[in-house]
Length: 196
Image 1: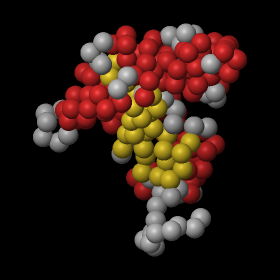
Image 2: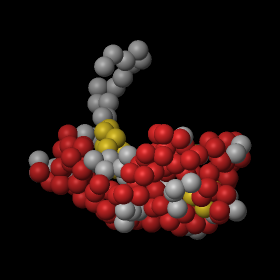
Image 3: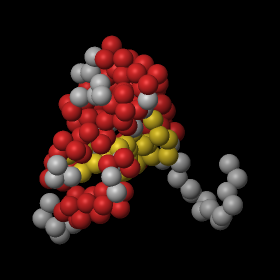
Image 4: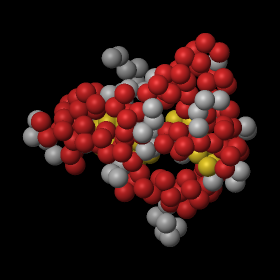
């Protein structure tokens, strides 16, 4: 890869992964892994185990691997239903293409996921979103009230993530309002010294 800016000699390499083999490869050879398996505890545990197994296989300490959580389509609002509905088009895309192991861990029927995929590609994101339940969204990302988002991020941190990447859902309305809500009512309470 040609870089058009000066790079330090030890530029870290991260691998973004969903599949267990890619997660294991990241644990084996990368400086860090960006875990893209949703927000469900069982999925996270399986993904971290896969990355850890890759590291263990080459006698590498798991502590040498930086672990990031990628959460697509985040939406927070005092109106929980509105936040969940805003995320459903993104959830339809991701869940419709999720590997079987991830669906099994989330306890989402593979047939339902494939139906979502079929409708998504035939009729569009909004039609696919109609097949996504609130429970599916909860397993997929952070969506709901700011207080619930704070609790979920605390759990993710406790599971072993060094960083959490929140991709705000653009269809949730004004993206500036969404970003402001995330910053002021989700991120700020989690900062050191905030009591969280």
